[in-house]
Amino acid sequence: MGLVTSFAGLVTVRFLLGLMEGPMFPGIVLYLSGFYTREDLSLRVALFFSSASLSGAFSGLLAAAIENMNGVGGKPGWAWIFILEGIFSVLIGILGFFVIPSSLQDSNLLSPKHKDILEQRRKRDRPSLSVDDRFSFKEVLRSAKSLHVAIIFISFFFLGTTLFGLALFLPTIVGELGFSPNRTHLLSVGPFATAFAGYAIYLTSTDKHVTYGALYLIVPGVYAVAPILAAWMANNSEPHYRRASSVAFGFMAANCGGILSTWSFPSNEAPRYTKTTIMNLTFSAIIVVASMANVLILDLKNKRKVQKRADILAPYGDDAQSNETAWKELGDRHPDFCYTL
Image (cartoon, rainbow, N blue to C red; front, side):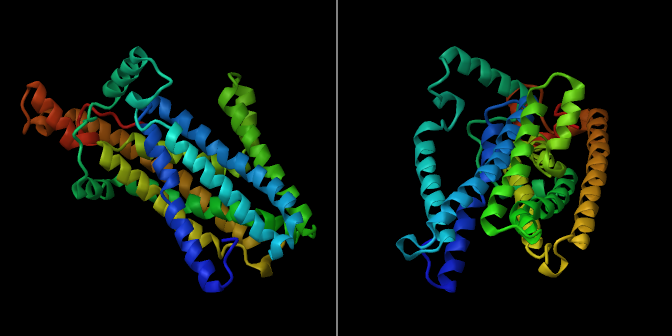
């Protein structure tokens, strides 16, 4: 984007950037779900999302520094931000291709014994795991028709509106307060750095009072909600391709919310943005209500599956092969699969 010379070129490159970056977040959540049990997944997803807060802090510092390159090579400072950060991202991507294992068995950091232990834990936690699992549109449709997926989809949309609005317009909000452009970049560091500190305290403290206090440091709760919804979506969808579809649906909704957020901070409402603040508070309240409803629905589903266990498993036999088939076909609808609340 730092090399474009026309509006058409900017739109084209921005489209390609979104096409490449779009699958990253859901892909990483799905990737982590392939390594950890459902109980362990939430913490790992939270650690991953905490990097978003940290990157927000560093981006402000980098932007303030790179802006000083304005005019170098005949390019404005903002162009150098895209060029330098883009080069760094590409290099990290290439490094990740060679360093990050595609599965537990491909990890060079684990001994064969540890690999077997972790693999057995995963199989106990997700009996629907299968090496011969193949993509099927049926799993995509089953995911789309799941009520709990639809509810989290809605929550993701409202979360995306508030989260992207905060991430994209924080420098604008600070700038509208009357600070210079360079100082605006520097002042944008604080909220994200505080959010990262909040995550660190929240994840490491064993004292309930300290943990509770850390919640106040997380930028208004928005960044704390994202990993919870992502892990919740991944934990309650099986088998693999149904889970992949559910996670993808969630982040699609969040990105659609991001589209709405581009109109959420009109310049004529600066610097208070009263209507936007009311909108974000309303969306946050909807997320709370939707989450409470989802807990009740999942609890009811768990109870109904137990009550109708015999009927659900009637088409399948009692042998090991039939049990494997039942898990593969039913996935999270299997009576022995317990939805996490």
